Image (tube, rainbow, N blue to C red; front, top):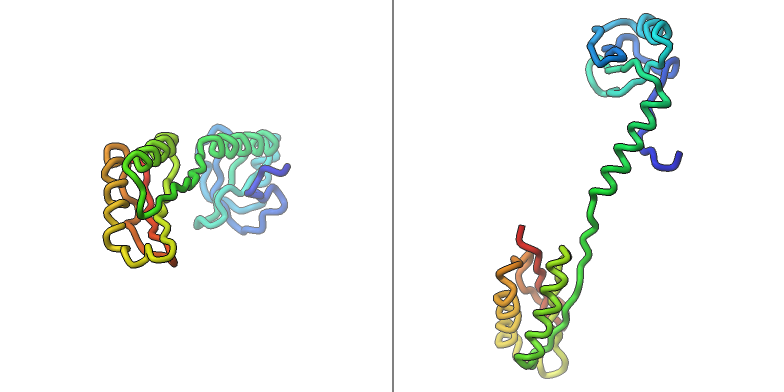
Length: 172
């Protein structure tokens, strides 16, 4: 199956001398030799599965292997469903932006933040605008201030090439 990431050793594939055995009902059966553990699994008409190879001694379970793999795959799918991919949305500003335009951009950023995305605020400089970098930093500060009720500054404004970049994240 394509979903499984962990491949378990089963029955004769287990190459340990001694293993800790967990029974079909979940109770510990103690540390026994591998031949004895295989015999216990065969008597129960089930498989011996190595579930924790790094433990000392390694841990094996007596289970129905088909059912065991099915349960593990279901758990993996559930875990994948609960994961959330955080996208980075960008809002571009210019140093001579007017108040209403800034408010529009703040509204866009607010929507992105409410959806749970990170927002990259980029202040782009062109030509002679680079001479007024210090005055332009206040635009980013004002932008962050207007969104301070729902966001925090993830990384403060820093200069990269011909633009100043700041990241905002949703408050938790």
